Image 1 (cartoon, rainbow, N blue to C red):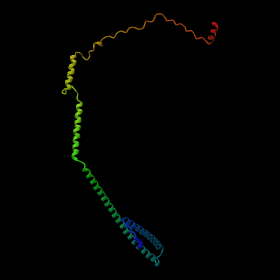
Image 2 (image 1 turned 60 degrees about the vertical axis):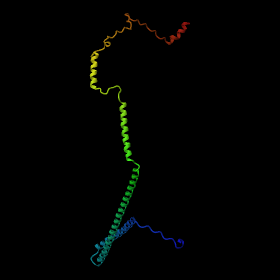
Image 3 (image 1 turned 30 degrees about the horizontal axis):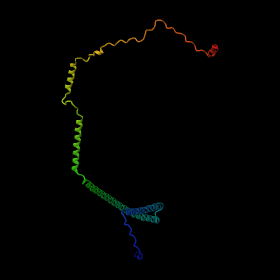
Length: 227
C-alpha cells in the first residue's frame, strides 16, 4: 500500500518553550534592526530640516520625519511585546524546571525511604540491646580478672602506712646503734706498706764512655790488619 499511495510524511515534533523563546528573541532582534534603521533616517531628516528655510520643502521633510517617527513607535511597541512574551516563557520554563527538579527530589526521597525500611526489617533492636548488655558484662569480667591477677600474696590488706613507719622507728631503737655510729671494721688503721725498692748507693755512679762508631775507612782497613 505504501508503494501505491506513498508513505505519509513524518509528523514534525511539537515546538517546545525553548524553541518558542529562541524564535521570539530572533524576532526581537529583527525589530530592533528596523528601529535602528529608522533612527538613521530621522537623523538625516533633522539635518535636512536644519539646513532648509521655512517653506513647502521643509514641511515635506517634516511630514516624512513624522511618518518615520510613528513607524518607529509602532516597532518599539512590537519589540516591547515580544520582549515581554519571551520573559513570560522564560519564567514558565524556570518554573517547569523547578517542578521537575522537585519531583525528582521527592522520587529520590521515596526510594531512599523504601530502601531504609527494607534494611531496618533485617535489624532486631532487642538483639542489639542484648549484645550491648553482653559486651558490658564481658568488660566487667575482664576488669575483675585483671584485678585478681594484680593482687599481692601473703600481704594483709589491713596494714596502715603509719603503723609501718612506727614499727620501722622502733626497729632502729632495738638494734642499739645510732645513725652516726661507724662499724668496727671501718675503725681499723690502714696497714703500713713495706718498701719494695732498695736504697740508692752513697757513691757517685761512674759513667763509662761509649765508643764511637767506626768510619767507612776504618772498617775497610781492619781486614787487612787482621791478615
